[in-house]
Image 1 (cartoon, rainbow, N blue to C red):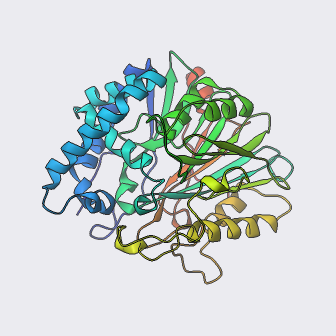
Image 2 (tube, rainbow, N blue to C red):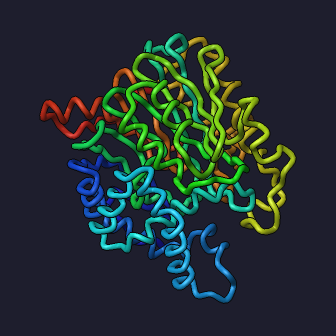
Length: 414
């Protein structure tokens, strides 16, 4: 059974996760200082994460049979640090400084912080798939609020759910951001900056070989900290060297939104169709399809038991089609409408691995995020959106500048 965490976390019966309260962690200063504060404030979660990695099916499955798990983690961490530290320091030095701060604040050796980043970079191999997601963007012309709406379900093995955090980064060196990430990470998967630029990162599986080892989550953080518009963010994401693949939704306060599809060396940009963008985990840009895992590829017996014999893109394609079907039926969409679509369990009404709100044997929706770039508004829930309440952060940048409150509202508009 998992030990309780001091993160507003509650648990259900036995080891079953219950509903989590979303807290906002306020970080200030340069990147080392923000990292140090993150390490201090979520120290228990970071230590708990590494202490309990043996409970993660993914990490345990990679361990050689006769090697003790603790020794395996130490060896894997040193290897990951050796392969990544120099590249991250060279291409994203501020994020490297943030990692040093997280290590110092949490008391966890810095090499261990490269383990979750290593997991992110091996997902191009179909035997190592560890994540998935569904995201959608609604243009101004389809939005009942008159501004772009972005929504994302973050799907991951349930082991990782207690470690998601929401943080406000008021940097002395870059634009301020509010983002959702995991406790040990410097980068993020979903976030918004003070200018209203929003980025939502789904995993992709580019099969070309990277020339550097910089995970996409680190680049997402860099884009949020240095860009003000969709065009600027697209330029940064496509031009920076990176490892791994991604399907990224980018939107700004002016109403422009696009999808950027990345492999380690190539990129494509997809425009909205009829005011909608839908992203799952396969490439849809014509120039990117040849770099994707083939559509007829299946998971092999080298993978975790729950995925063996399953077609790699099955869930991604079915989730994508279902979102497009449900969103296309509505002339305009509210936050409540998006919440309903992303809580969908398919025509049968029973959630599984192929539904938008995932309840699969290995993947499960662990976090949902809604972003409104013009309003600078972020809504977050930890757990399945079908059974959760969103916490509302209405323009936390303004609240802090004016000396306001915590920027946490009650339930989301439904």
